[in-house]
Image (cartoon, helix red, strand yellow):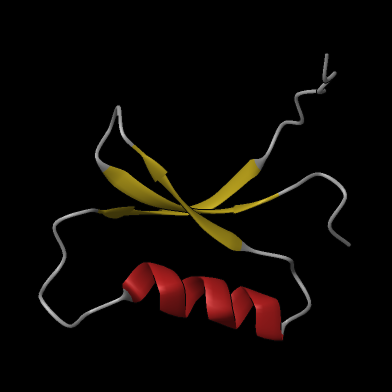
Length: 60
C-alpha cells in the first residue's frame, strides 16, 4: 500500500484551453515564474477547461 499526502497548491494564473494556434501563454508564464526562482508548473483543470500555472507550498 502506498501512502500519499495531499498538498495544497497555489494557482498563480489561469488561461483558457482554447488559445490561438501556436500560442502558449501558460507555458510562457510558467517559464517566467521559473526564471524568477519559483517552481511553477502547468496543469490542466478539466472541470473548468483551463490551463493553470501552479506552485506547491514548499516553493521558496
